[in-house]
Image (tube, rainbow over all chains, first blue to last red; front, top):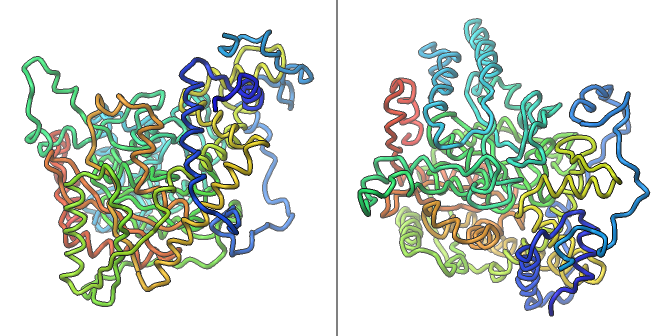
Length: 107
Length: 517
């Protein structure tokens, strides 16, 4: 079953990355087919494994401040900044819909 | 050996550093280094020299030139991950493993080349171009390659290093450094180690801190160690392993650095040969070598038995799903706001992010992000992501069963064949190649087990072939002891490189003994 344009569009929105061309879409199609092999395996009664260290307790540090005050270093790598803020374009504008976007999926 | 030479004053850290730096310049055609930190390296070497003169070196690694894969953060030095997304990004901090090396006095020569964001098995897909395997220029390879015609560019049949830590492997293999850091998520340290004829160690997940290693798959990534001999790997491991409060996935057990014993009696050893690792596509040469290695152990008195890891062939599929899913999550941090490339698009946050990511990532990265997001969609989550996690448990428990049955160490091939020429490698796309090449190395990452590639012999084409040992969780000492015994038995030949010979033979003489002690 092929992936629908709606799903492809949805993925582009979620990932904020574009398929670019037919090859990109085919890549996904092949990835899905490849992954489908998983369904050959019988996993009845198996618990999913999150981490190989699941038998151990996760380590949490004490909530003590041990380092910080590195505002200057952190801001150094940002392109757009004002005083001590990272500057972003307006955030409450969603990515344009499929019809209005410049995307390969239009075709 | 070289450490002893430093202590005895036969060579000084600055001499060593300068020789390595000039060798790096002479081997520029290998494209192993993205950034060479000449000034800082020389400064570090000078500091080291002062310490040696006072008779107070920090340790075995003091003054030793090392290289680090370019996906580790290094303060003040550009860290690119071979991607446009991070071009020009100067890390504000050192990764824990880098800091540990520097604290021991190691001299950081530079950052090595890789596949973009460590995704790939050839070190061919980064923005700085592919890495060339130093063995392409060895007399061993040149003797065996039949020139097809006068006009054929001799340059064009150079072979790949494997990946994704190809730069690190090439750097170690061409003598430009004594040890290098790589990363291993699906075999990225062991694969290039096998192709470049060096030792590649993947430690147990949780032993070495990942803080500062730009993450790919949080549940499988580990820093990898590349050296010219097993003893060196043990030394580097000793300085890197241990709990890091900044990485909560490092175990809290106390780690004691160890020296490897010289094993003489292997009769108490039980070596497992997993039959599923006789994978389709395994070259007959490597199959024969694997067999010979098994016999080597048998003849020395060890118990060698065939074992089964039934879910091996699903490992790569499982990896494909889990890797792309975690990658989709990890790559979300690259939005152009706080660091890295930022697009000029300014209409909205989302469109800026989308444009930044379109401009910054290559096809491979984008492909994985999109696939990962697909598998994580609500309608697919159970069928793909959770399913893969269940299969992962099956794979991990395969290993547990085998080790519980008394096997100490598993012996398998590392790669399906020797290094292929670049022109041939690029005929297939990155995913196909990764799928093929990771097949033998991937399962160890699934289960978090330690694994090591030991260079074994030269193929008919004059290129290195390695074999892999997989050990029990956190039993690096046992794993490396066996690896060292094996290394001693096979006496892998040293690479014969014109360019190295032209340089001062004296210093690198020490290296010869390193691999044949």
